[in-house]
Image 1: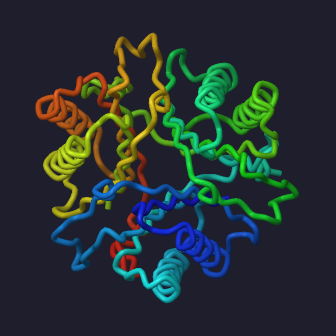
Image 2: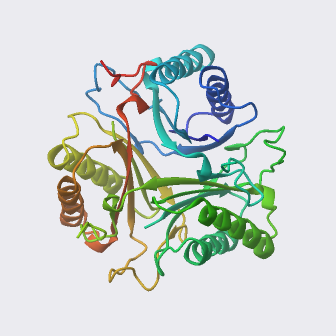
Length: 129
Length: 129
Length: 129
């Protein structure tokens, strides 16, 4: 169900992109009750300058060109506490496993309803019973 | 009104990308009551490995690198039955006209309100009366 | 908080892409009460044909390959009047400063809740008090 969009600078290697995707998936399943194997992600790379962040920082956080934008569309219903744990785990694990600064791990969530997905085959797999 | 994002592997030719866009538009107008000529789409191509799907499959469906991610932002209000018919038509027609596997047709919907669009010229064309 | 996605043809220069990003940011802060320095944007460029618009136009507006798609995810709560002023300012300023046609300035808004953001460091900066 989640559709994860990961946007990074073109200098981030394919290996690191795969690692980031795996970390986000692990955090979704462990911290946010996403079903196993529900791993659908679109990674996009961008030319220098095309990932824009405030030079002055925001809310006390400073960013670099290594910023990792992650936007996740998933079903509504997760609590504030679950979202907090998810953010924490994604940032911690990306830092631990890739060396990317925790400040550069940026996450946006979009919430939808279960009818809003087709996981292939033209079916609405999460249709109401 | 819909903004359609189509994300495919870079090996998908421009001709097939155009065909997919046309199919999604036809399905929106015929199955989901989208107005004629309301055809706005962003197609993005991705390097090998940057479209991520579960190797084990999900909900019994197996995927390949030919996966077609389609995410549509449109106005809320469509029924479950309309969405089902839309999913079916997109998958059937993409398969029939391009040979892409129906299992690889993946769709996500995001619902917004009519005030949330400007179709050019700085205007809110769907403003409340 | 807003995450701004700007999608343009690959022929649009990096300088113009930066200018468009700056204009959208200025309009968000001046017309839509977005906080200062809350400037997070992802610019993507596309091959010819991958930005799709209706050849017949829509609602009386004609488009060209110079179309600028802007999709903004931000917190819910802005009024219709604020959105109208925002659309107007973005279109006017893009036209005035880049020469891009006002008809080609296309905007989509997606509204979420404050818990749905992490601006880095694994934190939920807009957590409920």
